[in-house]
Amino acid sequence: MESWKFVLVVFVALALTAASALAQHRYYVRTLRRLARAHNQPGRALVSGRARSRLRGAIAVLVVRTSDGVIEAASVMEGASVLARFTDRPDWVGLPARGELPRSSPRVLAAVRDACSRVPGGLPTLRRPKAGGGTAGGAAPGGGTAGGRTAGGA
Image 1: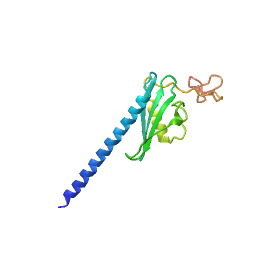
Image 2: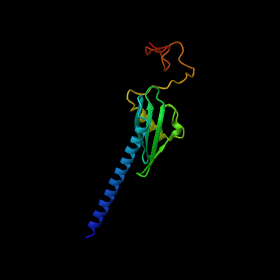
Image 3: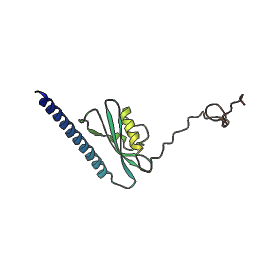
Image 4: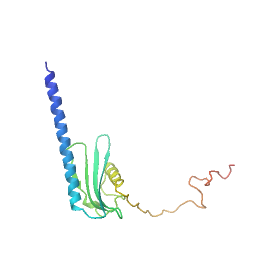
């Protein structure tokens, strides 16, 4: 019968999948070790985050100063196969990790947010300038008063 050929094809496909996944994992670990060696200083955190969509994913590896949340080094991998590679992002160095990052897809931004959530002790939040138009007279948001009653209700 021809079933042994089918079994052989399935076995070869499974072996290739396992080998490529192992190679991708080893590449990820090498990238982590490279960044850890280069930025092994007190007050720095090496974090990794990921984001997935239906077909593509993204992984962001950041070295962040824990005191102010500024990026010291960044490397990003985005793709749909095990052939995707990390690219260093020197244009992110010196920018706040929770701020706007140039040339980033929504997946990469989601991976950076995931990485920022993994910083031990958390990152400080960005202070945004107030844009005026706050609530006047102490009224609660939504138009009512703090007690939940409106002007004409009992």
